[in-house]
Image: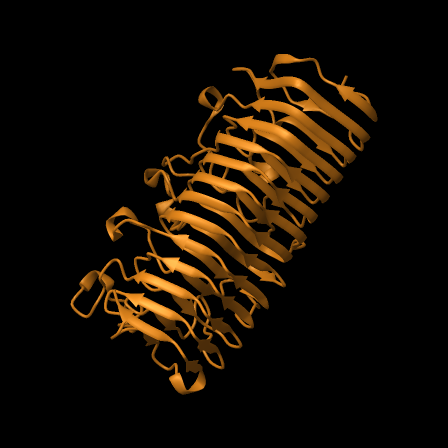
Length: 420
């Protein structure tokens, strides 16, 4: 049935054990594959790149079926790929694999027990993923740490994509991820909206090397669980909304996450964009979050990018082991944010575990203006206005400055600081 290069296909209902990948013809187009209550289940003998694969497919619709990857029997330790290899080349036992397709739609598909990625799309365009559910999926490396897999990965410059109205539960690695190798095209023109994340081992959402991506109205809880599977050797701190590479012209807005063992929002590589009206709440003590960090953090790991012109407005951080916002670079507007229950770790002058050489108040400041991240980028010409900052000793340490950073080179006014 699946050898047809085009046309409607209605799969038989029931459970179908699969021992080798179902490979659509290269360049297949105008296919509408309706599951009709079908479950495709990897058998104990399955070996291959994915349950279903397609190369250079066009105008493909895949809907209304379930895919069971038989993780309990097929999982094996897999490391992260070398920098010159793609995830498509490295990871076997995926759910769906699209390599170089155009106008691909997946809807109403349920994934469970996938050893690697549920959906992996590489160098594709116009990818629409909606009403997807993924649970109990993803793999580990040889040390028993998550290897980033389990969710949806769009790699090597996917253009025009949507991941909407979907549910991710008990994912070992990243749940939604855009990624491109250095030198590859950036992902572009994407929407990640109205998704739910529960029990994510690494990042709920990571925007990597992309432009014009909207991340809106997503919710989640328990980001960075189970703690024993966090990739401590790589210091892969879990994040609700993460960033990497060079990311601009993007918006993170109206997202809400509870219980994060890591960071709320990481802006490593983010510039010329906006972070508005997001909420992250941790209700426990510092001990409940061994990887707990600042709430919102800027960085500049990517070569050539500059941390600049970010609007951080109307966000609420309620419970952070250290500070609320870490700022580097210039031209930022940090306005009307609510930062509460900061410094859960009770860092202070007499807390040896909190001392960072050369930056004595890095971890106990509500808002910290740094001298740089991976590369030098002193905070200057930033507007920090009308923020509420409260927590352990926040009256004394509401704002902190790295050596060489001048308060006079930034505009601070109307901020309210209080002990809590």
